[in-house]
Length: 270
Image (cartoon, rainbow, N blue to C red; front, top):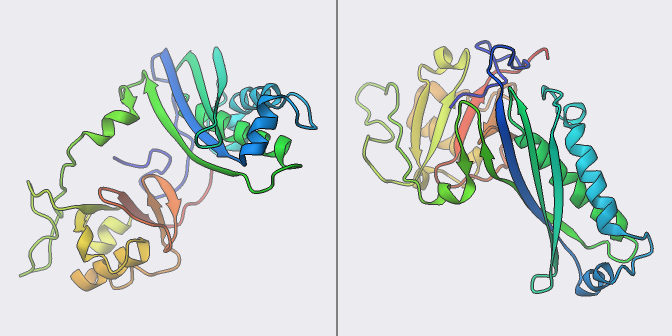
């Protein structure tokens, strides 16, 4: 899977969706904010000093979804037909679970709008409650599902039952066995070299067995690549950028089995 917001030269650009057919698009996301039990009780009783906390957080999440294009670079301005933000107070884990659903008939998806709604709703909950509890923690914000578009439907729960497909290195050094062979089930990290790095490193895709990483992060992956292939000797070039599962990363970013790690040259433009 390629990074859609990078062109062949590695430059960032806004995807042109003018030629895509309009269709129903929908996405759901969720997350939580954990707080002290006493804070959760005050929230349930509407006893916090700033008033109706959940109503304010709901409005903030809806507004954020509608203005996602102003917050996230390269996102399109969308005419959303529905934005809903809901809350579940969980006394067992002492947290508020936040869910958001976005919908439209259009040419591009609404995943970012749903994720932004959850994020800002959680931040608003923190702001509304911080007078009595500054130890609150926001976490586990993720996409739950999406519908529509050429990429098809997605359900987060389904990803845990899929069997990963190992990737074979496009080429290997003479006399060296590829890092992963087709059909193996060895836990591994998928590596992609994008744009000019395909020619620079002489390979576009390969798979590194997870047990060969020096440490379970990007730095450990870089060291494994250098140990396996001489061509990666300058993978530590500070000008090179890295993304893990299509999110910008650095050397300290942790890695797990079947993560996709992409290396690419510095992006330019917008």
